[in-house]
Length: 309
Figure (cartoon, rainbow, N blue to C red):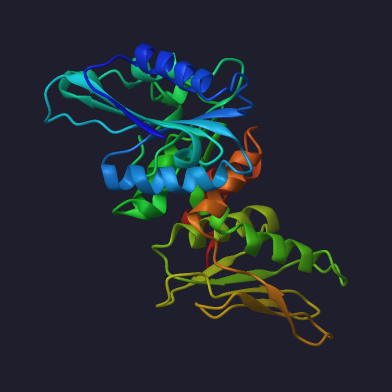
């Protein structure tokens, strides 16, 4: 069910949600968090809602989307989606016009569920310091997506400068399968130290940078970035005294070839992750991701200070 409200207030929208639940015979919510999406346009908002609806099957939540329309007359229009139109969630889309969009935190507060965590997601260009944003300051987790921005590397540099515990970027989740496979490979004998690492992928792809930063921080070794024409990471090579560990994947493949010294090559699952996959992962753990913070701040600093060969 989709209900449109014109010339309204956030409090009235919250009341309408209660009425819709009562009319549908639903009194208990069972929501585990409120996800606030700060979008810049309708297309961006709909893409985010689709991903959030898919993630809500694992994390039932209330989704509050804010799409400012500064060129419109001052006022607030809203759209409420429940039932089949909202997955395992409730969706509220707020469209503040004119000056009504200048105080986003005031618009959002009446729609926050009580006694559950708040997560804020910027699916487009984020503020330089998400935790200092009025809405971001209310959240336990703040999700950005540098890869969706016009200049992803510049966005990562700004996020690094403005980082606070609780921040995370979907580029980190995109690199999770690579990190998991490499960590598992290094757990196998021989447990030799890694002398150097090579990451093959496009430099403008922020998952490449974050993966390289993670390796530099965790392994304390030189990391070389090799540019590639493909749009994804295609290979990581870890040099050890007893032989190299290599994980390589074709750009459109769902599996990667894992090569370990003294063992036959084998294929392991390594699919390219979707937006829904990444969002679902970030909603699983709401505590600050210290490993991401170290890769972003310390790891990228090592790359920029010459640790990258």
